[in-house]
Each structure stands twice: as structure tokens, then as C-alpha cells.
Amino acid sequence: MGKYGYRFYTFSVHRHGDAATRLPLGELCGEGADAHGIPRSRSDAIVTLYGLLNGLLGRRVDEKTKHLTVQGVTPAGRSVRFIADLGTSGVNSTFIDPAASGSHPVFTRAEHHIESNRRRGLIVAGTKSTVGLLALESVSGSTGTTQIVPLLKRGFRAHTRMVIDFDAVVHENALQAFLDQARIGAVTLKRSGLPPDIADQLEVRDNQAHLGRLEMKISKGRIPEFTRGLTEKFRRDDSARRRLLSVGSLDFDELNVRMEVGDRSTTLSISADRMPSFVYQIQGRDRPDDQAFYREVSGMVAEVAQAFGAQIVGTTWQTGSWSEESLRTVVELPKQEGPSEGAIE
View (cartoon, rainbow, N blue to C red):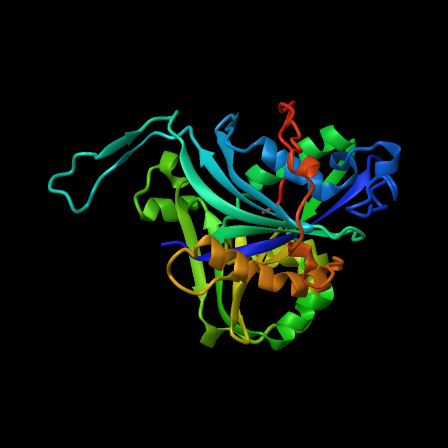
């Protein structure tokens, strides 16, 4: 059973060759763009992103072994809610029902079969703000950014001739304040793929070792309170992050610190090559329905926006109808050329 939650990402827009100057998300072409005949899909980031998702509504994008279909997209105020179906293919496997008698497969998966996973998302972009928010549903730590973000980046650049960047960086002051008041729980180190010596002991074949997953959990009673100086170490010292991920002769991919702040549970995720980010956990064992999920995420927007420097005005960011013209916006996704764009997790 998966653990359900969500992760916030920031995004900003700049002109090609001028990454230092972030543009107001609702006024990419300056004030009065409408008067100059510039369509809102080119001058307003929230409309562009909506148009991209709207263009993918009900249409499957197949790129090698990755597949994506947008199942729903709903704009309101300065926000857009969406649901995406993320799929992967290229795997051969058999499925066996342990409750059935015998060991005959109940299904044989071929390489062309697609395993799909649903993810919900929320985009918020204040008109005058140079920082926007993207919240993505997390299932067992996976948000699907490696599929969603590259498509948004490619389509945005092709349509506006501007660059949109996404990042999962936690605001330094917010991170330090969070750590100061957090009650540290278990620390878990994770690694994809089994080291050769462990694979040998478990009698796992070499060609299957990469499918294994190794976890080391350090319980609360055996770890010191290590919040002092943690912010600086996590954010600016790549070698320190790598040392945190190394135990003995084993190098791990990810370190997760479970925390409790008030009645909210969250997990701080750290990897060697990425800045730290939070996964906010949703209580309960069952996957929340759409109403419960968006209520939880929306309730965190104001707090996260303040930490990230996103300008969100009151509650009006999620209210207000769109014009018929904006609702009809469809932005075409260009075909992928060359290596796929980078994404963050």
C-alpha cells in the first residue's frame, strides 16, 4: 500500500539568455499586452500552462517507454487543477494470484502493455508574482515530475519563446524554522539496485540485481537531534550531502527524514545531486478522493507561497471564472527532438 502526499515545486519564467531576470507570471510581455494584440496564451504563464494541459486532454503522448494522458483540467482564478495518467511500458513480466490454487499466471505482461498511474496536480501563479507553485501528488515518494515537467518546459518554450524553470528547492529560512520546531522521527536511506556482495548473499542473479531496492532505517531512539547547521549543509555543500548518503561501503541514492510539526507529518528528502525538498503526507491508509486531496493542498498554498516568495493574494487565487477565449486555449505540444529535457523529482 502506498503512502499518499504531495510535493511543492516552484517555477519561474525568463527570456532566453537572461536567466537572472524573472518575469511577472501574469505579465510576461509587460503591462498592456492585450492592447498590443498579444494573446494571453503568450503573455500569461497560467493560461499557457492551462493551454498545454488542455491540448493533452484525452490524448496520449507516447515517447519511448513513457506515456502521458491528461484526464481533466480545471482553471479558476489564478490556479489550474489537473489530473494526469502517467504510464510506462517496455517490461515483460507475469502476474500470479497468491490466493489461487496452483501457480499459473493470471496475466502475462508484454513490452507494449502500459502500466498507468494517476497523479493530481495544482498550479498557482499570481499575476504580479515572479514565482509560481506547482503541487504534485506523491505516491510512495513518486510525483511523476520526470514525465510531466519536460512536456511543460518544451511546450512553453515553443509557444512563448521563453524559458520556464521548475525547482523543488526549499526556502532556506523556512527550512531552518521547520527543522527548529520539528520532532525528528526515523531516518531512512534508500538505494535502487543491490550491491554485488549483498546480491551474492541473497543469491540474486546479476541481471536481476538492478531490480532490487535496499533500505536502511535508523530509528528515532538511535539518532541525535541534528538540526543545527543542517540547512547550510543540505543546501550548499554537495560533498556533505554525498557523505550523508554513504554508510560504510554502501552509497545510497536518497535519505528521508520523517518529521512531525504540530499535527502535520512531512518527510524531508535529500539526494546527492539535488537540493532538499519536502513531501507533505496525507493522513490515512486510503488514497484521498479529489475533494479531500485538493482541500489539503489548497490549505498549504498560503504558507508555502510565503516561504518560497510567491505572491498569492488572499483566497482569490482559487476563485473567479475565466473568459470563454481563455477557456478555449489549446497550446500544441511540439514533438521531442534530441535528448529529453531534464526534470526534477
